[in-house]
Each structure stands twice: as C-alpha cells, then as structure tokens.
Image 1 (tube, rainbow, N blue to C red):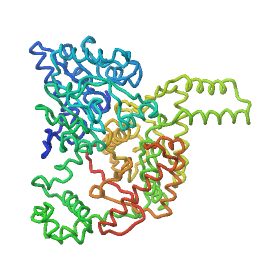
Image 2: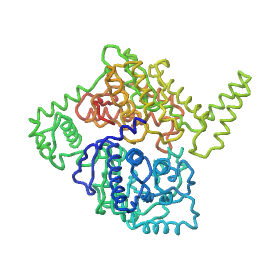
Image 3: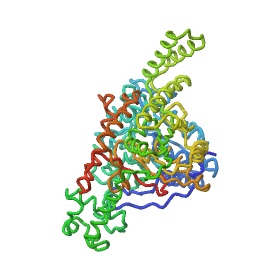
Image 4: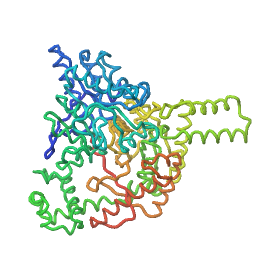
Length: 633
C-alpha cells in the first residue's frame, strides 16, 4: 500500500474558524487535513441519503485542489464500504473543443482520479462535453441545466478557486445569474495551464462551464484553497467586496457556504497575517517577531527606532503589556535576526551536507550562493536530484540533441543500423504526437539526459564534482506527464537508503507550500517520511528548508540568512546559465536565457534590502532558510 494512502487514514487535525471573513472560513494545519475534512462531509451526506433510500447529487471540480479529496473517497469506498451506487454527479466544466480521451480532458481526469475506482453508475455521471458542435452549444448548455433540475438540484457543490478568483471557468466579469455556457478563458488562466499543455499556445481559448447562478443554486457549497499561491485571491474572495471581478466573492451571499483552507492559503487573511488587528493574541516569541517586523515595515522605521507610541497607535498595546517593556521587545527581535546571519552555514568543522533538489535546477537557482559557500569552506557537499525533470524539456531541444548524435555518428562513425534506427524512431515519435501528449520512453530518456548533463555542469560551476551527485529519479515522477502519482513506499525507501549510505550532518530541503500535489511539496513529504524512518536508526541530520519558488521567505519566517558576496553571486549566475534547456520555460512572455538569473538575483538582493531597512547590517545579497522542526509540509 502506498505511503501516501497510509497517511490519509488519520483523523483530520482540529480546525479553526477565522475571524473577520465574509464567508465562514475553516483553517486546517495542512492540505491533507482539508482533504480529509471535505471527504468526511461528502461521506456523511452519502451515508445519510443512502440510509433513507435517497440519491446524493454532487457537483464536482477538477484541477489539483480536489485530488486529495478524491483519493480519500476512493479509500473510504475500498476500506470502509462507502457506497456510490446512488450518487449522481455533475462536473463544473470542460475545455472546448476537447476530445474526451485527451490527457487534458476533464472527462479523463475524473475517471482516472475517481470514477474508475468507485461503484458509481456510469449513467449518473454528467460532465460537460468538449465535442459539441458549435451550432449546438446553446442547446447543449440549456439541456445540462435541465439535467441538474431533473436530478433535484445539487446537494453539495465542491469548488476550487483560480488565481483570477474564478469558480468553474467563470472568469472575471461573469454575471451573478449566469448559467451553463461557453466562456472565453482569461489570459491568466491560460498562462497557469500552459505547463500542463506544454506551451500557452496549446491551451484552448474557450471552455464550457456551469454559471455562477448554477453554482449558487446548490444547497451547500464547500470551496477549497490550498497553497501559498492562492493566498492573495483567497483574501479578496472572503474579505473583499462582492464583485464580478472576483467571481468567488459571490459566494458571500450563499447561506450555506464554507471556505476550507490550509495554513499556506490563509496566509494573507487578516486574522492570520495580522491577528492583533482582530482580537486577542497569544504572544509567543514567534508572534512577537512577526508583529514587530510588521510594525517596522509599516512605519518604515528600523527596529531599534520603534517607540511606545508606534505600538499603541497600531493595535500592539497588548504586546507591550504582555512582553514589554519596549526596549526588551526591540532588543529580542533585533538580536534574534542578527543571530540568524550566518557566514558559515555548516560550521567550522568539515561535515557532509546533502542538498535535495526537486528538479535538476532548484539547487543553484534557489540556494546556489550557499551551495558555493559550503563547497568553498571545505564541506563534503553532495546534491540529490530527486526527479529527472524530463517533462520540462521542449521537443525542439530534444531534436537539437538528436541532431548532435547523428552528426557525431557521421563524423566518427559509421553508426550501426540500430543507432540510426533509434534516432529515426525518436524523430518520428516527436513528429507524430500532439502538443502535451506523453513522450516515448526513448525521447523521455534523451530529455532526462539533457537535464542531467546540465545539472552536472551547474554543480561543477558551484564547486560540486560529478561523483558527488545523485540522480534519484523517484518513481512518483515517472509518468511522462505533468500529473504525478502519490508519494509511495518506493520513493521513501530510495531517499532513506541515501541517508543511510551518506549519514549527512546537515541537509537542505525545498520547503514550498504552493501546490499540494506539486513536485516540490511531494518531494519534501517524501524526505520527511524518510527522515522519520532513519531517525530510529540514529541518523538525525540538521534540516534546513529553502524556498524553491521565486519569492523568499518573509523575514519573520527566516531562521538563517547566508550572505552572498558579489563574486559568489556571479558564480551562482554562471551555474544557473548552464541550464540552457530551461530558458524557454520562464513564466513570463518575452523572457530570455537571463530570466531565471534575473529573478533569482532580484530575490536575494530584495532580502538584503529588507534586512538593511530593519536596521541590520547591509549585505550585497542574502539567501534565507527555515529550520525544520518537524511540522508536516
């Protein structure tokens, strides 16, 4: 049984209702806790209706957000006899046009992630069709509405939320009373889907979606948001005014709607980011640090220049009362940050250090300066690349390398018939596939080799030789697709074996909370599970988390910063430039091979600027880290 499945049998952790939200908002510590809670609500409704001989009508969503819920429902069906035979489902949306067999189709998504694993009657499954002829679209959409009415309406609607605030594909500007229809997708929505489609140019321009009015007609609604990349839009949806600019804000008017979020997605809500503005606070050292840094940045005053009046005028009188006097508060926070500035991140005595890099470039992009410092200071630095990263290589780069092989064979040949045939098969496979279709194993191997050689060149630039690199190629990633399997026992075993073999004194882990089913977070989870295993054998390395995304940790979250000199920063740049195949995968249109470097450089310089503005020593650049204390990511 997969490790991920085993972990999901736990009872959800206790939740907290957040204050000052216009939609009742339930905060859970982690994404799996949200998954289990939502699945429990669905289970309870199904069992209640089954016992009364009534059908249960569910509105279902797609995307990464509900995947954990569907996995838990499958477990409940298999292990606890949850019966879906009387369940009727209506999905929110589908791209148009879209073949139902495409890997991008929501028909296929729902069957692979839920329907093929439960005993639902196929006649009770309703998913908007992406194959309807243009002339028949209006009639089809009207019929979809009639089918919902014929089923008695939706008992419980499950929603995610897009970065534009859309629910379903109801993009900004959608009317409150809208019904099932064809819509044009917002450019942000298409850009967010670009990686799944292997290029924004391959993302459909239109989709069929239930309307806002259709969604609001459901008797109960649960909307889910997971990960820090949803924090801004969650705040606008639950604390802002009702506006068609954020269609999720229309849910404020629904009498039975609950917003379920994890810690990361709730990060910008007032009661989480600045709880002293909404009521009583338990003033721990961590909360004190957060509040004082917030005050310093709010007033644009260095920490040691803050005065009593600044605290009193900004809702922090309770902090003064509980943790004062003011001089003690200032000094504690200042000294805490000052003590975190570390020029020798692994100490003065040589020790073995492992950097876990989810993709083959996260090491140099996110902590390349620290990597260089560790190597230069004589530590035994090793890098474990957890996935091949092969799906992030474009076809034209693979073809370029195939060209090289063929030219090499001609120059130093002759090539054998089989060698020529391999190149011909790969060319044919690339030419025959549609954008976003899985590659053949041979093409995937070439793309993986491209990433591997780039990673080795980058690591060498940072001072880590090839013999100290590990390419783990974890099984969860080996689907040939953007969507991945859950973390399993084999993934954990591979990492645990590496820890046993090397017995490091210190490790670094990408600690992103963005996508609960994204590669960074899944790799972090696998490492944590492996650490739990080897701890019983006495292997207990010091663990530090680095941000693998393009933004640094907030200053109150940082436990250690490592200064980067101008020379170290230039070496980091040179290492990043070795990842040539990734220059086209930058997130913004019009970028070039400098894009990764520019954003990585801006991140470290911005952290240095913040520390300087807080009144701390001035540095050229800083890379930030959090100490891992056992929280589940």
